[in-house]
Image 1 (cartoon, helix red, strand yellow):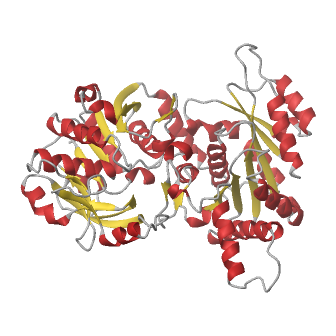
Image 2 (image 1 turned 45 degrees about the vertical axis):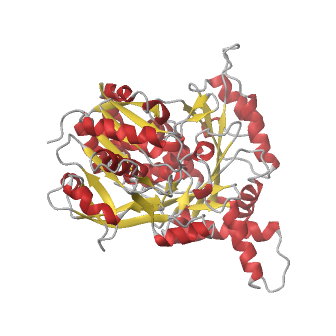
Image 3 (image 1 turned 135 degrees about the vertical axis):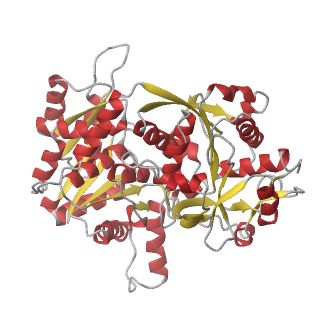
Length: 539
């Protein structure tokens, strides 16, 4: 088994996840079995308790593990599903070691940060590799070189290099800024980030040099001299408009061949999956028609800045479906609070999405958005909380249950059309929050003749969930009589998974998160239908 560690320097958000996903694609296209792992320095046991504005969206795997958003990049680029072996936070690692100590599994030896923690890290890396029978394990180290939070991961990297010298490669992603007042690309921050890595006992084998534009020979020469890395091992990684170009740029820059040479591997014949990827990217570049989509939510603003990481899988799913239909999406963030008094702002969009979320802030704006789309025949796609909003709106304005609500927001509502399941209520009372929602892949039976079933093209689906509240079965007959169709139901008949309005251009909402299973080369059918309807093409 071979190992490739990926670290970052200078700034956070430099693109380690995209780079790791791209390397995984390049190696898979060369015929190798690859598994990526994210080693996150946070002491949180998983990503489920983190604020999406601070850490980005929580990406849920089929087995229910709540993970970092980088797992989404891995799955999209690999066109494959991963499991819990592909994520380890520092908190989960410490917890495992402490639990074993409590169980006397260390036979009375002292438990130390080094080597007890570092051995646990290495064991998890090897376990992940074995779980997929992988030829190569890719390990993305969270954080930035020079921070003490990720030193133990770097130490595990160093120790593994000592044991398996020729089987371990380190790729360092660094940044070369171009200050506008100077107009010149500066290499000093990149040089210093490599020195920070050196101070942890690691000399990178390859540098991915991030910058606004490609590096010139002068900058490459400076980096080579200051870091002791051969010029051909410094790969330029300029900004791109479409992240799906990144693996193609890396391959063109020689990254695939350099990695395989250092790992003493040769490409396997007839395994070039990049052909399909290249065709996809080229088709995107030729697209000039647009579709305008509005996302009504609350996880956008952080100080004076607007971020998209909280809904990155939704954004990518929109792109996948749009690209597949020869369209470029224009996506706007709509603050739900602004919709309450002015729902007409939605009319300039071809389609509206109300994504997942929690809590009471601006909930009325989302309900108004669902109402406006239903009444004005605007394509609507509700995702998890977006289903709850659509159900509440229908109850209030069609069934006449004027103060209908979800008990998440109004525990004393007269019409609890959305309520918490009994097992979830018990967990909430016990403050058992972490990893206890309805999580992971659950099956749903699709109603014969429904729009949803036509879009999927099959009678049963499996989709990923992350929620505590469900449609209240006491009101199901009322809804169905009034025209709200429950087109997806759990196999035992107890849980509503999908709703739709059949005499509408497109009005579908899901209890699950379909965006988590959308891929560039295989867009999700519900997003495909939504985009088609948004361009008046849905039959």
